Length: 440
Image (cartoon, rainbow, N blue to C red):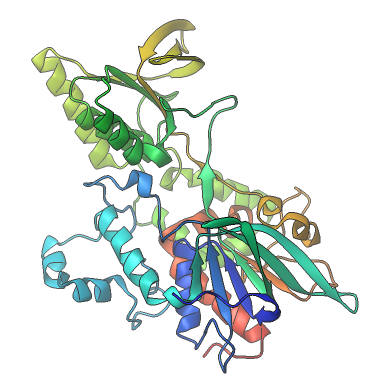
């Protein structure tokens, strides 16, 4: 692709930091409104992504894992059902539209949806610079006003080379980062689920024996990791450790799922703090530490079949926590405590996999000193307007939009695919209106 024009004399109307599904959806919306990486009649936009190519949770693209949201909640359909960037247009382009319809499902394979994302990203490739890791964002002040941001990025192929791009607005969508328990240290034998597939492939190629693997966690990723390891290492015992009595089914009932409707974001954003908290508490079961019922039933059948056959490899260590992890030359020693009795058991394991979820990065992690320009509420959380624009100090006229890290202002869907298309449309409209360009 053509490299994005760089230097402080080259001013972008909007520069996106990160290029996962959220900023990809925004790039599409802006492209459909005439955006270009060059000076011209339309808004000048660009996106920076530290990965060498588009990638979305590649480490968990298990071959038979399906999406947990409808394909209609793709990059564009909820914003514009006529867009040719839809999943259905992708299927038509790939020659699988009729075959997919014959499956009678709303939930494609995860690997297929990732291919859809790559297909869409390739069509807006001119707007993106891959292998560009943002290392600093600095405010640019003119006549007492912060009118621009200078974004410095490091070239992955030449780490000593920094490129500076100046922008009138930013859209930060750096995604979530793996969360690990305190003092947990990743190694060749201690992983986070985000790296599951490449680590298993590497271990399989090495021929190293796997006699026991331990997975900590009670959510969808934990259950998928347990199932995948059980299939990948047919001679190994797989121990699933979690504090609950059993996996909790995800609440995907029609009424509960309305928490992800665009209208629910309106209500949530305007609600008092105590109402927001109660909504998060009531509906955590739609997203956090829950597992699809089909997978729960499949794992249960496997356990029973192994009981019948007299060879139990799948072991559910419920109401338990990991208390100690000791690295060893050939694996790890994991101490598991059964909480009702405080009894402890030492497990010699070849693998320990943390399925402990993800967490948003702080705004200071992404924006450095620019984060000090962002106003905060009584809980010290960043204030964010309904249009996903950060509320900044009065002398700041350069906008900052957030995609993610806004659960406290926009609800459970702020980090999910459910409202990606709608959110991208809202940011696009706000940005264009702010530039006097109009969104229609």
